[in-house]
Length: 256
Ligand SMILES: *[C@@H]1O[C@H](CO)[C@@H](O)[C@H](O)[C@H]1NC(C)=O
Ligand SMILES: *[C@@H]1O[C@H](CO)[C@@H](O)[C@H](O)[C@H]1NC(C)=O
Ligand SMILES: *[C@@H]1O[C@H](CO)[C@@H](O)[C@H](O)[C@H]1NC(C)=O
Ligand SMILES: *[C@@H]1O[C@H](CO)[C@@H](O)[C@H](O)[C@H]1NC(C)=O
Ligand SMILES: *[C@@H]1O[C@H](CO)[C@@H](O)[C@H](O)[C@H]1NC(C)=O
Ligand SMILES: *[C@@H]1O[C@H](CO)[C@@H](O)[C@H](O)[C@H]1NC(C)=O
Ligand SMILES: *[C@@H]1O[C@H](CO)[C@@H](O)[C@H](O)[C@H]1NC(C)=O
Picture 1 (cartoon, helix red, strand yellow):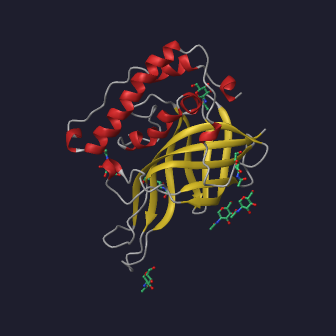
Picture 2 (cartoon, helix red, strand yellow):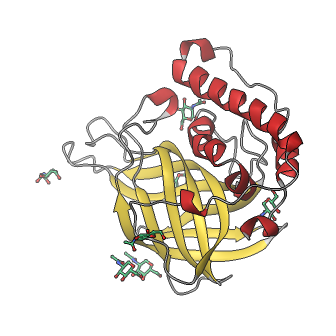
């Protein structure tokens, strides 16, 4: 059903084909980067080949949505899947070096992964770890290195307890959603901790519910398959504000 709204797999394969392999000169010194990139390009190669033979899109991956978080509420349908790439922002009181950093928000660009989600769930699930290895050059960077997924929205905080998503772009208007946290679980132990697996761990998986002011019938948002984003456990040696690179999958649900 959802695949009818999206594109057939053959087109996905075209959208994913032939990226230049962006190994950096220093990549040999970064084993995690090499590992995730080679896994990604091997998987991509097999998808592109398989895609050529697919006449119809495979079934969608609704079941790939999180199981350990509360279920999606009854009557909601999957509207969009995005890879978010950006930073989690923190503040530190310079007066107290044993206090933990406080969350002050996040800033991320959302890239359209609906087609990948509906056809290549295994590829979707490694995209955050691959994307984490490359910093965005700006919040308007047109595609998600090393894929060519296009921008589908932006994520920021309007205050410290209100994560906000806009899925309105020049191309599509899917709505906006100011949200509140509904539930949180720790990322799995094996989640990539940060760039080159150096870092303080992956931010939790979340279920968010829309606050008043949401448009496009958006009701619930899940953040899953997180990589990076956690701060150090204390403020010792940290500046007053700082950012930690992260990436995640975001699943957006609307009232049918
Ligand atoms: C996402 O990409 C698919 C094609 O892969 C397209 O059909 C869909 O409209 C795009 N959605 C947004 C929000 O850009
Ligand atoms: C969540 O949904 C799954 C699949 O529909 C179902 O098997 C499971 O019992 C549900 N869990 C809860 C807590 O409702
Ligand atoms: C510093 O932070 C720690 C951990 O939050 C807290 O237990 C302690 O009371 C704080 N010290 C001062 C002086 O505020
Ligand atoms: C997070 O950091 C970015 C980059 O410095 C900044 O543009 C943004 O305003 C910060 N966001 C929050 C919520 O502090
Ligand atoms: C990404 O940017 C951060 C600064 O926010 C920097 O410390 C890090 O080295 C950069 N990583 C890459 C892979 O360029
Ligand atoms: C943040 O914004 C939400 C939604 O507007 C509001 O309900 C909440 O009280 C605000 N919280 C703070 C700490 O300002
Ligand atoms: C989470 O959502 C459920 C279902 O909408 C609701 O019953 C519950 O009160 C919410 N919990 C929190 C902490 O917001």
